[in-house]
Image (tube, rainbow, N blue to C red; front, side, top):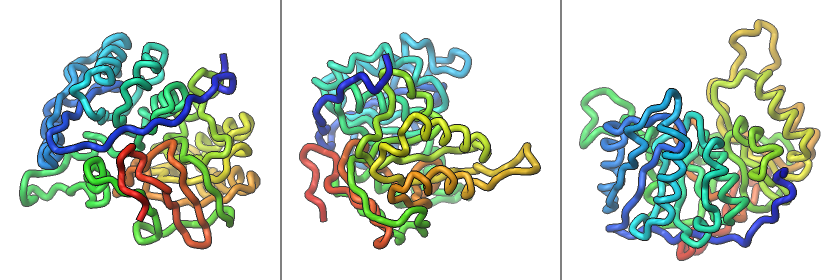
Length: 332
């Protein structure tokens, strides 16, 4: 059954965190590093949160963090556990699509809580949003805190960008995201203004949802795309597939996040990434901007998926109408 045949449930929002709440850290895709995750979790503890590291952080099955059954069982368990208030994925990699059929979306809807991650986690964002209606968060994971030292940085390591860390701070003190060029320059691809719930994430994973019950739904939505280490011809192929599936035409607007290291390498003759983006996005005719620091980049700005936002090219902004939490702050 294709995704277009699945009705979307009503939107539900998780509650914000409070000091003393417990955050679960699973590895639902590729193997994590338990020691590194423990060190990274120190930042969450300094925010006043408790941390429960998942069993999957210690599991290995080739390029997966344990079997599909083990990873799905842990994620279902974290959603069902009343003592867990949020789930922040340790990392992406590969493997979330393999467990999508094993998740209990009805149970997830009955136990709404923060679900947070990006990259390969995109498949779960699409699945959970489509089948449970839960607002989820496209944001930095434990692997993005791997170089966070205690106290002063005397080892020459790069500290995570303050705006990356701000995403975690919003877990306890929510406010709606107002993204402007104060963060980084934005490039208008198609002028105009569009509004709708934000949907999307990693381009490779969005394409992999097509034809499944978890298919990305872009109807009337702002489509977010980002990726890493994909040559322009591969980005071309994926955008072509999204176009032919109607996803670009269905979108209200297009938000182009970071495409880190998406440059030609093995082909001497190549279109540039900008040329590829223009060939697909401009003809779609929907308001679109590129340059958002969302995805495999620093800073990595956390954004709520499923929440209404306004993309305005004249104002060079992406403004969310709410924080995405059930008791979050009103928009500033």
